[in-house]
Length: 483
Image (cartoon, rainbow, N blue to C red; front, side):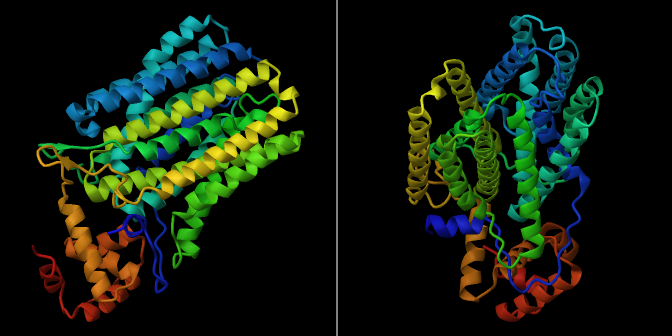
């Protein structure tokens, strides 16, 4: 199985025969939107702590939080094999998130308005940062057990919820906006813990199996984060503007994905996010040397949009890899997030250094930076294209310690059989999805909820499917997949 075919099997494809769609998304899976809104609001100056305060403490807090965010993700990655499923450690999740919420409130209400010394901000950040890392990894574990279709749709809805919540918080007066921001991680945690009880448990780590790091994918995430961090290079008075651009880009990503899932489900392919991100990034880099306030803002927004869309695609890809190859989620998501945050931190640091040094006054510098950025983006494309030898898992699938051979998980074995059966019987992509769910013993109602299809549509696909497979009952179909 080649990388292209494997990736296509990981990313949901829709059939042109669909005539019904059930867009109702349970609220319990939208807690991710609360988490994203929290991350956005803490970077919006007008909200956190509000306008009229000194920017130096605000920048110091941003830097401290990013540093300790990266450290928290790296620690989680180091202890992942011993910790296992993070959803099984409720006390750790609750304690860390409560500390993060309290830290958010103290910083926004007290420390930033009083313009305290940076040492105090760094001290609070040590306690506040781990909760965000734990909450992100907890949601990653939940989403990785949903399957590709639900991951994509719930993720899109979460983006929309995050944008709506962020804009609502922005309408509040600063003291109340800070309080509302502090509540977001607590509400998100409640949704995450409830959701974790309603999805299958993450499979236990197989004994005698190691899980390699998908280094190329993590490298690309770091580069994408760097371009996002440096995106406001051609702008003046940029502090806080990038966060608003991120909110807008997040909303746009959610709306586009959800609209395509509903309206253009016959040609829906979430990989278009990666394809569109490339020209967006190159266009933004080309705008930087042209100068002008308007073009500077356009370049910054396009780079943010490219980053958000590409990140959304990578997170779906990682969730699909964990789902299909039964890879433990904690380490792979922690490393991907750490790489992204490190890239953003490096980009922001470079941007501030260049602005302070007045390097942009030299007309040649923006041109050199633009060309260098385009070269970096094209190198990422080459790295992506070179990933053909690991069968679409980016090298993250389990490997037996004794034999150094890839361990084929039960789900990967089952999905491979589904693909062979679909090819032999000329099934559509949607019929193949329905077949796989029926073969797992899912009820009609469960299939409707998992694929967001109406009752009549599921019945129609099942009827066509039974005819192509030459079976008359659900039991006969299940018998085809018995090992």
